[in-house]
Length: 364
Image (cartoon, rainbow, N blue to C red; front, side, top):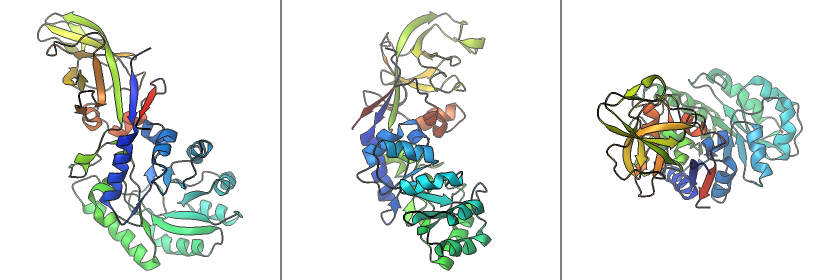
């Protein structure tokens, strides 16, 4: 079998969730498992967390239904609410919670008769300018929802644009907006995403929404004591399938981007952009070879990539390659470091690992 595998450490997932809870012990933590748990497998991750998580969060009803079909009974929040009024019977039947960010969603719920009141999270556009009611509209919408028999527990939610940044100016503006609304309405808040959970205690509300931190990625521009405790959940592991001796001046890969400045030994790895490894990775992108750091040499191909192993004499056919995650010797290659070499973020790498890469689960 092709040696490329995504190893998913469910013990690390549970550790990271507990870390999120310890960051904000007065809050409840929704585990965000949208986008197939950021590429890790939503069902397996939900099963691993179900005994200690008060609610999960997903982006759409299809993701919620996949969890329900797998037997997950924990409450599930639809972070974008419904996309059509036709979804409301499913929301009711499967006891889902829903965000409301638009007038038409409110009106659709008003025209629907559920079997039991539906918990609603009213989304406010406090500055992200994607979804949500304007702050000056929020009080009247809140009171409309309060008066509706269709609505159960009611929360205010919003999303931060800059919680990961060292400059707190814009974050503070959003906080002022949401704190004023919460005070006016007596409303419980759900504001904190992963960076705010880790570093903005003033944003910790009745609920927080840790996402990428659950999978071991540090979302902060300036790491702190909490982020240093994160453990990688996914290890993208492969093997060397061929070795080449390259003379000084010879090139490797498409376009001849990488040229040998010395006599070099190049390892060919079973992994490429057809698996989701980013084609934009530059020469020098780190990998682990037998737990030792080496670097990418040449452009990523669809099914293979090439690594300079000149300084790793024990590199051989079948040697362990870790593209991100934890090597067998315990050495860790942060996905955040790899992402920087690809001019992207960890989210795109994790969610970009394609289905042909088998997931193997540990810590079940």
